[in-house]
Image (cartoon, rainbow over all chains, first blue to last red; front, top):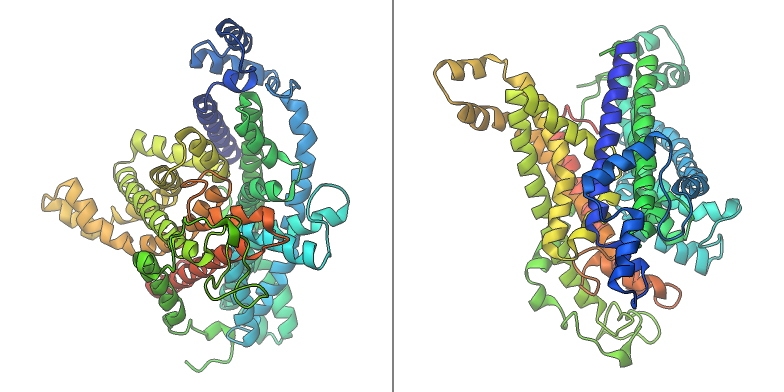
Length: 305
Length: 285
Protein backbone atom coordinates (compact mmCIF):
# COMPACT_ATOMS: atom_id res chain seq x y z
CA UNK A 1 0.00 0.00 0.00
CA UNK A 2 2.74 2.43 0.99
CA UNK A 3 4.74 1.69 -2.14
CA UNK A 4 1.70 2.10 -4.30
CA UNK A 5 0.86 5.42 -2.71
CA UNK A 6 4.43 6.63 -3.17
CA UNK A 7 4.37 5.66 -6.84
CA UNK A 8 1.05 7.41 -7.38
CA UNK A 9 2.23 10.56 -5.61
CA UNK A 10 5.42 10.59 -7.64
CA UNK A 11 3.69 10.15 -10.99
CA UNK A 12 1.08 12.71 -9.96
CA UNK A 13 3.81 15.20 -9.07
CA UNK A 14 5.50 14.52 -12.41
CA UNK A 15 2.24 15.16 -14.24
CA UNK A 16 1.74 18.45 -12.39
CA UNK A 17 5.33 19.48 -13.10
CA UNK A 18 4.82 18.62 -16.77
CA UNK A 19 1.64 20.67 -17.04
CA UNK A 20 3.27 23.63 -15.28
CA UNK A 21 6.21 23.62 -17.69
CA UNK A 22 3.97 23.30 -20.74
CA UNK A 23 1.78 26.18 -19.59
CA UNK A 24 4.81 28.25 -18.62
CA UNK A 25 6.16 27.98 -22.14
CA UNK A 26 2.74 28.36 -23.79
CA UNK A 27 1.79 31.60 -22.09
CA UNK A 28 5.10 33.11 -23.10
CA UNK A 29 4.20 32.36 -26.70
CA UNK A 30 0.93 34.26 -26.35
CA UNK A 31 2.64 37.54 -27.01
CA UNK A 32 4.39 40.29 -25.16
CA UNK A 33 2.50 41.44 -22.07
CA UNK A 34 4.30 44.76 -22.42
CA UNK A 35 2.36 45.45 -25.63
CA UNK A 36 -0.90 45.12 -23.68
CA UNK A 37 0.12 46.62 -20.36
CA UNK A 38 1.96 49.71 -21.50
CA UNK A 39 0.19 52.74 -22.94
CA UNK A 40 0.48 52.98 -26.73
CA UNK A 41 2.67 56.09 -26.51
CA UNK A 42 5.26 54.29 -24.37
CA UNK A 43 8.75 54.62 -25.72
CA UNK A 44 11.00 51.71 -26.53
CA UNK A 45 13.01 52.35 -23.38
CA UNK A 46 9.91 52.36 -21.19
CA UNK A 47 8.82 49.01 -22.64
CA UNK A 48 12.32 47.66 -22.03
CA UNK A 49 12.16 48.85 -18.42
CA UNK A 50 8.82 47.11 -17.97
CA UNK A 51 10.11 43.87 -19.46
CA UNK A 52 13.23 44.08 -17.34
CA UNK A 53 11.24 44.78 -14.17
CA UNK A 54 9.23 41.58 -14.63
CA UNK A 55 12.19 39.61 -15.94
CA UNK A 56 10.66 38.87 -19.34
CA UNK A 57 13.88 39.89 -21.05
CA UNK A 58 15.74 36.90 -19.66
CA UNK A 59 16.05 33.51 -21.38
CA UNK A 60 13.00 31.34 -20.79
CA UNK A 61 14.81 28.60 -18.86
CA UNK A 62 16.14 31.18 -16.42
CA UNK A 63 12.60 32.46 -15.91
CA UNK A 64 11.40 28.89 -15.34
CA UNK A 65 14.06 28.15 -12.73
CA UNK A 66 13.15 31.38 -10.96
CA UNK A 67 9.47 30.51 -11.06
CA UNK A 68 10.19 27.08 -9.57
CA UNK A 69 12.29 28.60 -6.81
CA UNK A 70 9.51 31.00 -5.86
CA UNK A 71 7.01 28.18 -6.11
CA UNK A 72 8.97 26.13 -3.61
CA UNK A 73 8.50 29.01 -1.18
CA UNK A 74 4.77 29.10 -1.91
CA UNK A 75 5.09 32.31 -3.87
CA UNK A 76 3.19 32.38 -7.16
CA UNK A 77 4.26 35.89 -8.07
CA UNK A 78 2.13 38.98 -8.64
CA UNK A 79 -0.57 39.50 -11.21
CA UNK A 80 0.63 41.82 -13.97
CA UNK A 81 -2.73 43.44 -14.43
CA UNK A 82 -4.05 43.65 -10.90
CA UNK A 83 -0.72 43.96 -9.10
CA UNK A 84 -1.90 41.64 -6.34
CA UNK A 85 -0.25 38.43 -5.18
CA UNK A 86 -1.53 35.59 -7.41
CA UNK A 87 -1.96 33.36 -4.38
CA UNK A 88 -4.40 35.81 -2.78
CA UNK A 89 -6.41 36.19 -5.98
CA UNK A 90 -6.71 32.43 -6.37
CA UNK A 91 -7.68 31.91 -2.76
CA UNK A 92 -10.36 34.55 -3.21
CA UNK A 93 -11.84 32.79 -6.25
CA UNK A 94 -11.33 29.15 -5.31
CA UNK A 95 -14.31 28.92 -2.91
CA UNK A 96 -16.72 29.98 -5.67
CA UNK A 97 -15.50 27.26 -8.00
CA UNK A 98 -15.55 24.67 -5.22
CA UNK A 99 -19.07 25.67 -4.26
CA UNK A 100 -20.23 25.34 -7.84
CA UNK A 101 -18.51 22.06 -8.70
CA UNK A 102 -19.25 20.33 -5.41
CA UNK A 103 -22.92 21.27 -5.71
CA UNK A 104 -22.99 19.98 -9.28
CA UNK A 105 -21.25 16.76 -8.23
CA UNK A 106 -23.62 16.19 -5.31
CA UNK A 107 -26.68 16.93 -7.45
CA UNK A 108 -25.50 14.51 -10.10
CA UNK A 109 -24.78 11.71 -7.61
CA UNK A 110 -28.04 12.15 -5.68
CA UNK A 111 -30.03 11.86 -8.90
CA UNK A 112 -27.88 9.39 -10.80
CA UNK A 113 -27.80 6.57 -8.27
CA UNK A 114 -31.57 6.09 -7.91
CA UNK A 115 -32.13 6.67 -11.63
CA UNK A 116 -29.50 4.10 -12.60
CA UNK A 117 -30.85 1.55 -10.09
CA UNK A 118 -34.44 2.01 -11.27
CA UNK A 119 -33.37 1.66 -14.90
CA UNK A 120 -31.42 -1.53 -14.13
CA UNK A 121 -34.16 -3.17 -12.06
CA UNK A 122 -36.79 -2.38 -14.66
CA UNK A 123 -34.55 -3.20 -17.56
CA UNK A 124 -36.22 -3.06 -20.94
CA UNK A 125 -39.30 -1.24 -19.65
CA UNK A 126 -40.48 2.26 -20.43
CA UNK A 127 -38.70 3.65 -17.34
CA UNK A 128 -35.41 2.14 -18.39
CA UNK A 129 -35.70 3.54 -21.89
CA UNK A 130 -36.84 6.96 -20.70
CA UNK A 131 -33.92 7.19 -18.27
CA UNK A 132 -31.43 6.09 -20.90
CA UNK A 133 -32.79 8.56 -23.46
CA UNK A 134 -32.42 11.37 -20.91
CA UNK A 135 -28.91 10.20 -20.09
CA UNK A 136 -28.01 10.09 -23.77
CA UNK A 137 -29.35 13.61 -24.22
CA UNK A 138 -27.40 14.79 -21.19
CA UNK A 139 -24.20 13.43 -22.68
CA UNK A 140 -24.92 15.00 -26.06
CA UNK A 141 -25.89 18.53 -25.12
CA UNK A 142 -23.16 21.20 -25.22
CA UNK A 143 -22.97 22.68 -21.71
CA UNK A 144 -22.68 26.29 -22.84
CA UNK A 145 -25.84 25.96 -24.91
CA UNK A 146 -27.73 24.28 -22.11
CA UNK A 147 -26.67 27.16 -19.86
CA UNK A 148 -27.94 29.78 -22.32
CA UNK A 149 -31.25 27.97 -22.80
CA UNK A 150 -31.69 27.72 -19.02
CA UNK A 151 -30.97 31.43 -18.76
CA UNK A 152 -33.63 32.13 -21.37
CA UNK A 153 -36.31 29.68 -20.24
CA UNK A 154 -35.89 29.56 -16.46
CA UNK A 155 -34.41 32.98 -15.94
CA UNK A 156 -35.85 35.37 -18.52
CA UNK A 157 -39.21 33.79 -19.38
CA UNK A 158 -40.25 32.06 -16.16
CA UNK A 159 -38.17 34.16 -13.77
CA UNK A 160 -37.46 31.14 -11.59
CA UNK A 161 -33.87 31.95 -10.77
CA UNK A 162 -31.32 34.73 -11.20
CA UNK A 163 -29.45 34.45 -14.48
CA UNK A 164 -26.04 35.59 -13.37
CA UNK A 165 -23.92 36.78 -10.52
CA UNK A 166 -22.83 35.41 -7.22
CA UNK A 167 -24.67 35.48 -3.96
CA UNK A 168 -27.11 33.26 -2.15
CA UNK A 169 -28.39 29.82 -2.97
CA UNK A 170 -30.61 31.03 -5.79
CA UNK A 171 -27.61 32.18 -7.82
CA UNK A 172 -26.25 28.67 -7.63
CA UNK A 173 -29.28 26.94 -9.19
CA UNK A 174 -28.80 27.53 -12.92
CA UNK A 175 -25.00 27.20 -13.11
CA UNK A 176 -25.03 24.06 -10.94
CA UNK A 177 -27.79 22.49 -13.05
CA UNK A 178 -25.88 23.26 -16.23
CA UNK A 179 -22.66 21.86 -14.86
CA UNK A 180 -24.27 18.71 -13.47
CA UNK A 181 -25.91 17.64 -16.75
CA UNK A 182 -22.95 15.73 -18.14
CA UNK A 183 -21.78 13.97 -14.95
CA UNK A 184 -25.40 13.16 -14.11
CA UNK A 185 -25.91 11.49 -17.48
CA UNK A 186 -22.64 9.57 -17.36
CA UNK A 187 -23.05 8.39 -13.78
CA UNK A 188 -26.63 7.23 -14.43
CA UNK A 189 -25.41 5.05 -17.26
CA UNK A 190 -22.57 3.67 -15.19
CA UNK A 191 -24.78 2.88 -12.19
CA UNK A 192 -27.16 1.10 -14.52
CA UNK A 193 -24.48 -1.06 -16.20
CA UNK A 194 -22.79 -1.79 -12.88
CA UNK A 195 -26.12 -2.78 -11.36
CA UNK A 196 -26.92 -5.05 -14.30
CA UNK A 197 -23.54 -6.71 -14.02
CA UNK A 198 -23.78 -7.22 -10.28
CA UNK A 199 -27.32 -8.59 -10.54
CA UNK A 200 -25.94 -11.30 -12.81
CA UNK A 201 -23.40 -12.52 -10.23
CA UNK A 202 -23.55 -15.80 -8.35
CA UNK A 203 -23.75 -14.20 -4.93
CA UNK A 204 -26.95 -12.45 -5.93
CA UNK A 205 -28.43 -15.77 -6.94
CA UNK A 206 -27.30 -17.14 -3.58
CA UNK A 207 -28.94 -14.24 -1.79
CA UNK A 208 -32.16 -14.81 -3.71
CA UNK A 209 -32.14 -18.55 -3.10
CA UNK A 210 -31.76 -17.90 0.62
CA UNK A 211 -35.20 -16.42 0.32
CA UNK A 212 -34.24 -12.80 0.86
CA UNK A 213 -36.71 -10.24 -0.34
CA UNK A 214 -36.02 -8.63 -3.68
CA UNK A 215 -35.68 -5.29 -1.91
CA UNK A 216 -33.01 -6.70 0.39
CA UNK A 217 -31.15 -8.26 -2.55
CA UNK A 218 -31.27 -5.09 -4.58
CA UNK A 219 -30.29 -2.54 -1.99
CA UNK A 220 -28.21 -4.51 0.46
CA UNK A 221 -26.34 -6.92 -1.79
CA UNK A 222 -26.37 -5.48 -5.27
CA UNK A 223 -26.23 -1.72 -4.84
CA UNK A 224 -23.28 -1.78 -2.47
CA UNK A 225 -21.16 -3.57 -5.03
CA UNK A 226 -22.52 -1.62 -7.95
CA UNK A 227 -21.41 1.64 -6.36
CA UNK A 228 -17.73 0.66 -6.50
CA UNK A 229 -17.19 1.75 -10.13
CA UNK A 230 -19.09 4.96 -9.35
CA UNK A 231 -16.23 6.02 -7.07
CA UNK A 232 -13.83 6.05 -10.02
CA UNK A 233 -16.23 8.16 -12.00
CA UNK A 234 -16.23 10.80 -9.30
CA UNK A 235 -12.56 11.32 -10.11
CA UNK A 236 -13.30 11.56 -13.82
CA UNK A 237 -16.24 13.84 -13.10
CA UNK A 238 -14.04 16.28 -11.30
CA UNK A 239 -12.06 16.70 -14.51
CA UNK A 240 -15.27 17.31 -16.42
CA UNK A 241 -16.43 19.72 -13.72
CA UNK A 242 -13.22 21.75 -13.71
CA UNK A 243 -13.27 21.89 -17.49
CA UNK A 244 -16.98 22.64 -17.61
CA UNK A 245 -16.57 25.29 -14.94
CA UNK A 246 -14.35 27.27 -17.30
CA UNK A 247 -17.25 27.70 -19.70
CA UNK A 248 -20.15 27.72 -17.26
CA UNK A 249 -18.49 30.39 -15.12
CA UNK A 250 -18.05 32.54 -18.21
CA UNK A 251 -21.73 32.26 -19.14
CA UNK A 252 -23.13 32.91 -15.68
CA UNK A 253 -20.55 35.53 -14.66
CA UNK A 254 -19.59 33.25 -11.78
CA UNK A 255 -16.50 34.65 -10.05
CA UNK A 256 -14.53 31.40 -9.96
CA UNK A 257 -11.15 30.05 -11.01
CA UNK A 258 -12.21 29.14 -14.54
CA UNK A 259 -13.23 32.67 -15.42
CA UNK A 260 -10.19 34.07 -13.66
CA UNK A 261 -7.82 31.98 -15.78
CA UNK A 262 -9.67 32.67 -19.04
CA UNK A 263 -9.54 36.42 -18.38
CA UNK A 264 -5.89 36.14 -17.39
CA UNK A 265 -5.18 34.39 -20.70
CA UNK A 266 -6.87 37.25 -22.51
CA UNK A 267 -4.78 39.78 -20.60
CA UNK A 268 -1.57 37.79 -21.05
CA UNK A 269 -1.30 37.89 -17.29
CA UNK A 270 1.35 35.14 -17.16
CA UNK A 271 1.73 34.71 -13.40
CA UNK A 272 -2.02 34.49 -12.91
CA UNK A 273 -2.45 31.88 -15.67
CA UNK A 274 0.39 29.80 -14.29
CA UNK A 275 -0.91 29.94 -10.75
CA UNK A 276 -4.48 29.12 -11.75
CA UNK A 277 -3.40 26.21 -13.90
CA UNK A 278 -1.17 24.87 -11.14
CA UNK A 279 -3.99 24.92 -8.60
CA UNK A 280 -6.39 23.21 -11.01
CA UNK A 281 -3.84 20.53 -11.87
CA UNK A 282 -3.08 19.88 -8.21
CA UNK A 283 -6.77 19.54 -7.35
CA UNK A 284 -7.42 17.21 -10.25
CA UNK A 285 -4.41 14.95 -9.64
CA UNK A 286 -4.98 15.02 -5.88
CA UNK A 287 -8.62 14.01 -6.11
CA UNK A 288 -7.79 11.20 -8.50
CA UNK A 289 -5.15 9.79 -6.16
CA UNK A 290 -7.67 9.98 -3.30
CA UNK A 291 -10.24 8.22 -5.45
CA UNK A 292 -7.79 5.45 -6.30
CA UNK A 293 -6.98 4.96 -2.64
CA UNK A 294 -10.64 4.95 -1.71
CA UNK A 295 -11.23 2.43 -4.46
CA UNK A 296 -8.66 0.02 -3.09
CA UNK A 297 -10.11 0.38 0.40
CA UNK A 298 -13.66 -0.28 -0.76
CA UNK A 299 -12.73 -3.11 -3.09
CA UNK A 300 -10.09 -5.38 -1.53
CA UNK A 301 -9.76 -7.35 -4.76
CA UNK A 302 -7.75 -4.63 -6.42
CA UNK A 303 -5.60 -3.68 -3.48
CA UNK A 304 -1.95 -2.99 -4.25
CA UNK A 305 -2.24 -3.87 -7.89
CA UNK B 1 -33.11 -18.45 -22.74
CA UNK B 2 -36.05 -18.77 -20.45
CA UNK B 3 -34.86 -17.40 -17.21
CA UNK B 4 -36.88 -15.44 -14.72
CA UNK B 5 -34.01 -13.96 -12.81
CA UNK B 6 -31.87 -11.13 -13.98
CA UNK B 7 -28.95 -13.50 -13.47
CA UNK B 8 -29.71 -15.42 -16.60
CA UNK B 9 -30.66 -12.51 -18.78
CA UNK B 10 -28.53 -11.96 -21.78
CA UNK B 11 -28.07 -8.74 -23.63
CA UNK B 12 -30.69 -8.84 -26.33
CA UNK B 13 -29.33 -8.82 -29.84
CA UNK B 14 -28.60 -5.18 -30.47
CA UNK B 15 -30.71 -3.56 -33.10
CA UNK B 16 -29.13 -0.99 -35.36
CA UNK B 17 -30.22 2.54 -34.42
CA UNK B 18 -31.91 3.19 -37.77
CA UNK B 19 -33.12 6.66 -36.74
CA UNK B 20 -29.67 7.78 -35.66
CA UNK B 21 -28.04 6.43 -38.80
CA UNK B 22 -30.66 8.16 -40.94
CA UNK B 23 -30.19 11.48 -39.13
CA UNK B 24 -26.42 11.33 -39.41
CA UNK B 25 -26.67 10.47 -43.11
CA UNK B 26 -28.89 13.52 -43.57
CA UNK B 27 -26.44 15.76 -41.71
CA UNK B 28 -23.60 14.44 -43.86
CA UNK B 29 -25.64 14.99 -47.03
CA UNK B 30 -26.49 18.53 -45.93
CA UNK B 31 -22.79 19.22 -45.35
CA UNK B 32 -21.79 17.88 -48.75
CA UNK B 33 -24.54 19.62 -50.71
CA UNK B 34 -24.64 22.81 -48.61
CA UNK B 35 -24.26 25.27 -51.53
CA UNK B 36 -27.24 23.72 -53.32
CA UNK B 37 -29.44 23.30 -50.25
CA UNK B 38 -28.94 26.65 -48.54
CA UNK B 39 -31.59 29.22 -49.49
CA UNK B 40 -29.00 31.97 -49.63
CA UNK B 41 -25.40 32.94 -48.99
CA UNK B 42 -24.76 32.40 -45.25
CA UNK B 43 -22.66 35.56 -45.07
CA UNK B 44 -25.23 37.84 -46.72
CA UNK B 45 -25.89 40.76 -44.38
CA UNK B 46 -29.20 42.64 -44.69
CA UNK B 47 -29.61 44.94 -41.72
CA UNK B 48 -33.18 45.92 -42.58
CA UNK B 49 -34.40 42.41 -41.81
CA UNK B 50 -32.36 41.78 -38.66
CA UNK B 51 -33.78 39.64 -35.84
CA UNK B 52 -36.65 38.26 -37.98
CA UNK B 53 -38.27 35.48 -35.92
CA UNK B 54 -38.91 31.93 -37.22
CA UNK B 55 -41.86 31.49 -39.60
CA UNK B 56 -44.41 30.33 -37.02
CA UNK B 57 -43.99 33.42 -34.90
CA UNK B 58 -45.53 36.81 -35.44
CA UNK B 59 -43.44 38.75 -37.93
CA UNK B 60 -41.77 35.63 -39.29
CA UNK B 61 -41.90 34.53 -42.89
CA UNK B 62 -41.15 31.39 -44.89
CA UNK B 63 -38.43 33.31 -46.68
CA UNK B 64 -36.40 32.77 -43.49
CA UNK B 65 -37.94 29.67 -41.90
CA UNK B 66 -35.65 29.78 -38.86
CA UNK B 67 -35.38 33.56 -38.72
CA UNK B 68 -32.37 35.84 -39.07
CA UNK B 69 -29.61 36.93 -36.71
CA UNK B 70 -28.51 40.35 -35.49
CA UNK B 71 -27.00 41.17 -38.88
CA UNK B 72 -29.99 39.90 -40.82
CA UNK B 73 -28.21 36.75 -41.97
CA UNK B 74 -30.43 33.74 -42.71
CA UNK B 75 -30.17 31.25 -39.81
CA UNK B 76 -31.12 28.20 -41.87
CA UNK B 77 -28.41 28.90 -44.44
CA UNK B 78 -25.80 29.41 -41.71
CA UNK B 79 -26.95 26.22 -40.01
CA UNK B 80 -26.53 24.28 -43.25
CA UNK B 81 -23.03 25.59 -43.87
CA UNK B 82 -22.13 25.17 -40.20
CA UNK B 83 -22.59 21.40 -40.50
CA UNK B 84 -19.50 21.32 -42.72
CA UNK B 85 -17.18 22.69 -40.05
CA UNK B 86 -18.54 20.42 -37.33
CA UNK B 87 -18.23 17.26 -39.40
CA UNK B 88 -14.86 18.06 -40.96
CA UNK B 89 -13.31 19.00 -37.62
CA UNK B 90 -14.89 16.00 -35.89
CA UNK B 91 -13.74 13.48 -38.47
CA UNK B 92 -10.28 14.84 -39.32
CA UNK B 93 -9.24 15.60 -35.75
CA UNK B 94 -10.32 12.16 -34.56
CA UNK B 95 -8.67 10.42 -37.50
CA UNK B 96 -5.42 12.27 -36.86
CA UNK B 97 -5.54 11.73 -33.10
CA UNK B 98 -6.48 8.07 -33.49
CA UNK B 99 -3.73 7.50 -36.08
CA UNK B 100 -1.04 8.97 -33.86
CA UNK B 101 -2.46 7.24 -30.78
CA UNK B 102 -2.60 3.83 -32.46
CA UNK B 103 0.94 4.13 -33.80
CA UNK B 104 2.28 5.19 -30.39
CA UNK B 105 0.26 2.48 -28.65
CA UNK B 106 1.64 -0.20 -30.95
CA UNK B 107 5.20 1.05 -30.55
CA UNK B 108 5.10 1.51 -26.78
CA UNK B 109 3.29 -1.75 -26.15
CA UNK B 110 5.55 -3.75 -28.43
CA UNK B 111 8.93 -2.30 -27.51
CA UNK B 112 8.32 -1.09 -23.96
CA UNK B 113 11.36 0.51 -22.32
CA UNK B 114 12.19 4.20 -22.16
CA UNK B 115 10.01 5.14 -25.12
CA UNK B 116 7.03 3.54 -23.41
CA UNK B 117 7.73 5.35 -20.17
CA UNK B 118 8.21 8.76 -21.74
CA UNK B 119 5.15 8.61 -23.97
CA UNK B 120 2.85 7.29 -21.29
CA UNK B 121 4.02 10.01 -18.87
CA UNK B 122 3.25 12.64 -21.52
CA UNK B 123 -0.21 11.12 -21.74
CA UNK B 124 -0.56 11.36 -17.95
CA UNK B 125 0.34 15.03 -18.08
CA UNK B 126 -2.31 15.67 -20.67
CA UNK B 127 -4.99 13.80 -18.78
CA UNK B 128 -4.05 15.55 -15.54
CA UNK B 129 -5.75 18.66 -16.70
CA UNK B 130 -9.05 19.88 -18.11
CA UNK B 131 -8.24 20.00 -21.79
CA UNK B 132 -10.42 23.00 -22.60
CA UNK B 133 -8.00 25.34 -20.81
CA UNK B 134 -5.03 23.97 -22.71
CA UNK B 135 -7.03 24.24 -25.93
CA UNK B 136 -7.85 27.87 -25.15
CA UNK B 137 -4.18 28.65 -24.57
CA UNK B 138 -3.08 26.77 -27.68
CA UNK B 139 -5.69 28.48 -29.86
CA UNK B 140 -4.68 31.84 -28.45
CA UNK B 141 -1.08 31.10 -29.47
CA UNK B 142 -1.86 29.60 -32.88
CA UNK B 143 -4.69 31.94 -33.87
CA UNK B 144 -8.04 31.21 -35.45
CA UNK B 145 -8.50 28.90 -38.39
CA UNK B 146 -9.79 25.50 -39.43
CA UNK B 147 -6.36 23.87 -39.54
CA UNK B 148 -5.44 25.09 -36.07
CA UNK B 149 -8.72 23.91 -34.58
CA UNK B 150 -8.15 20.47 -36.06
CA UNK B 151 -4.56 20.43 -34.82
CA UNK B 152 -5.50 21.41 -31.27
CA UNK B 153 -8.37 18.97 -31.06
CA UNK B 154 -6.31 16.09 -32.42
CA UNK B 155 -3.68 16.77 -29.77
CA UNK B 156 -6.52 16.22 -27.33
CA UNK B 157 -7.47 12.80 -28.52
CA UNK B 158 -4.40 10.61 -29.00
CA UNK B 159 -4.00 9.52 -25.36
CA UNK B 160 -6.95 7.11 -24.96
CA UNK B 161 -6.04 5.31 -28.19
CA UNK B 162 -2.41 4.97 -27.20
CA UNK B 163 -3.36 3.63 -23.79
CA UNK B 164 -5.88 1.16 -25.06
CA UNK B 165 -3.81 -0.15 -27.97
CA UNK B 166 -0.76 -0.44 -25.72
CA UNK B 167 -2.73 -2.52 -23.21
CA UNK B 168 -3.99 -4.82 -25.93
CA UNK B 169 -0.55 -5.20 -27.46
CA UNK B 170 0.95 -6.10 -24.09
CA UNK B 171 -1.60 -8.89 -23.77
CA UNK B 172 -1.39 -10.05 -27.38
CA UNK B 173 2.34 -10.09 -27.92
CA UNK B 174 2.80 -13.04 -25.59
CA UNK B 175 0.19 -15.08 -27.36
CA UNK B 176 1.08 -18.05 -29.48
CA UNK B 177 -0.05 -16.71 -32.81
CA UNK B 178 2.28 -13.74 -32.45
CA UNK B 179 5.17 -15.93 -31.38
CA UNK B 180 4.45 -18.22 -34.31
CA UNK B 181 4.66 -15.34 -36.79
CA UNK B 182 7.84 -14.15 -35.13
CA UNK B 183 9.29 -17.65 -35.35
CA UNK B 184 8.83 -17.74 -39.11
CA UNK B 185 10.85 -14.54 -39.30
CA UNK B 186 8.30 -11.76 -39.67
CA UNK B 187 9.58 -8.24 -39.07
CA UNK B 188 8.31 -6.14 -36.16
CA UNK B 189 6.38 -3.79 -38.41
CA UNK B 190 4.61 -6.68 -40.10
CA UNK B 191 3.82 -8.37 -36.79
CA UNK B 192 2.30 -5.27 -35.25
CA UNK B 193 0.44 -3.93 -38.24
CA UNK B 194 -0.68 -7.15 -39.85
CA UNK B 195 -1.23 -9.44 -36.90
CA UNK B 196 -1.78 -7.34 -33.80
CA UNK B 197 -3.57 -4.29 -35.20
CA UNK B 198 -6.62 -6.17 -36.57
CA UNK B 199 -7.22 -7.50 -33.07
CA UNK B 200 -7.55 -4.04 -31.59
CA UNK B 201 -9.77 -2.73 -34.38
CA UNK B 202 -13.08 -3.22 -32.56
CA UNK B 203 -12.36 -1.16 -29.45
CA UNK B 204 -10.64 1.49 -31.58
CA UNK B 205 -13.74 1.91 -33.76
CA UNK B 206 -15.95 2.20 -30.69
CA UNK B 207 -13.65 4.74 -29.06
CA UNK B 208 -13.43 6.71 -32.30
CA UNK B 209 -17.19 7.03 -32.63
CA UNK B 210 -17.49 8.54 -29.17
CA UNK B 211 -14.55 10.84 -29.75
CA UNK B 212 -16.13 12.25 -32.91
CA UNK B 213 -19.12 13.23 -30.77
CA UNK B 214 -16.95 14.78 -28.07
CA UNK B 215 -14.76 16.57 -30.61
CA UNK B 216 -17.78 18.19 -32.26
CA UNK B 217 -18.79 19.59 -28.88
CA UNK B 218 -15.21 20.70 -28.17
CA UNK B 219 -15.03 22.52 -31.50
CA UNK B 220 -18.31 24.24 -30.74
CA UNK B 221 -17.01 25.24 -27.29
CA UNK B 222 -13.89 26.79 -28.80
CA UNK B 223 -15.96 28.62 -31.42
CA UNK B 224 -18.31 29.79 -28.68
CA UNK B 225 -15.36 31.27 -26.80
CA UNK B 226 -14.22 33.00 -29.96
CA UNK B 227 -11.22 30.72 -30.45
CA UNK B 228 -12.47 28.61 -33.30
CA UNK B 229 -12.48 28.73 -37.07
CA UNK B 230 -13.25 32.44 -37.10
CA UNK B 231 -15.42 34.82 -35.10
CA UNK B 232 -17.84 35.60 -37.91
CA UNK B 233 -17.68 32.17 -39.54
CA UNK B 234 -20.87 30.17 -39.91
CA UNK B 235 -20.13 27.47 -37.33
CA UNK B 236 -22.66 26.14 -34.90
CA UNK B 237 -20.63 27.16 -31.86
CA UNK B 238 -20.02 30.67 -33.17
CA UNK B 239 -23.71 31.08 -34.01
CA UNK B 240 -24.66 30.22 -30.42
CA UNK B 241 -22.15 32.81 -29.26
CA UNK B 242 -23.48 35.45 -31.68
CA UNK B 243 -26.95 34.93 -30.22
CA UNK B 244 -26.03 35.09 -26.58
CA UNK B 245 -26.42 38.86 -26.29
CA UNK B 246 -29.87 38.69 -27.92
CA UNK B 247 -31.32 35.89 -25.80
CA UNK B 248 -34.18 38.00 -24.46
CA UNK B 249 -35.32 39.33 -27.84
CA UNK B 250 -34.21 36.66 -30.28
CA UNK B 251 -33.75 33.26 -28.66
CA UNK B 252 -33.73 31.53 -32.03
CA UNK B 253 -30.24 32.72 -32.96
CA UNK B 254 -28.70 30.53 -30.25
CA UNK B 255 -31.38 27.86 -29.98
CA UNK B 256 -31.23 26.28 -33.44
CA UNK B 257 -27.48 25.73 -33.77
CA UNK B 258 -27.48 24.15 -30.29
CA UNK B 259 -30.27 21.82 -31.33
CA UNK B 260 -28.29 20.92 -34.43
CA UNK B 261 -25.23 20.06 -32.31
CA UNK B 262 -27.32 18.05 -29.88
CA UNK B 263 -29.10 16.04 -32.57
CA UNK B 264 -25.87 15.30 -34.44
CA UNK B 265 -23.93 14.36 -31.33
CA UNK B 266 -26.83 12.29 -30.01
CA UNK B 267 -26.98 10.31 -33.26
CA UNK B 268 -23.25 9.65 -33.16
CA UNK B 269 -23.44 8.57 -29.52
CA UNK B 270 -26.32 6.20 -30.26
CA UNK B 271 -24.37 4.69 -33.14
CA UNK B 272 -21.33 4.40 -30.87
CA UNK B 273 -23.40 2.58 -28.26
CA UNK B 274 -24.63 0.18 -30.87
CA UNK B 275 -21.12 -0.40 -32.25
CA UNK B 276 -19.87 -1.09 -28.74
CA UNK B 277 -22.63 -3.55 -27.96
CA UNK B 278 -22.27 -5.41 -31.20
CA UNK B 279 -18.50 -5.28 -31.73
CA UNK B 280 -17.17 -5.56 -28.25
CA UNK B 281 -19.58 -6.49 -25.48
CA UNK B 282 -16.74 -6.50 -22.97
CA UNK B 283 -16.55 -2.71 -23.10
CA UNK B 284 -19.18 -1.43 -20.80
CA UNK B 285 -19.08 2.27 -20.37
